[in-house]
Image (cartoon, helix red, strand yellow):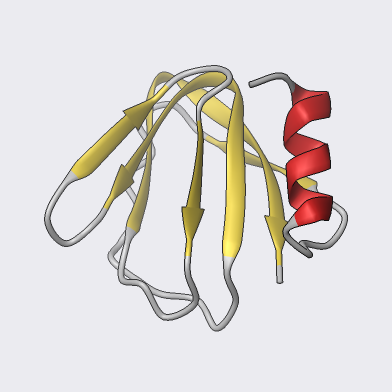
Length: 88
């Protein structure tokens, strides 16, 4: 997916204006949840989304959606990662 396509999808799904989220190389976040839903697309590096039953490995152009209240962890590969993130 291109960044323009992702921005259009965010708007169509009712997400707010996206922001960049930076992850340091080998970042390994704790299991947590948010009070908001989020859609994110990888724009640089490798991102790993840890869920209760799987870990999704994503590269540039891959995207995911995490519903409010979903337990997850956020991890980055050896060069770190940048994501474009919209929330609602």
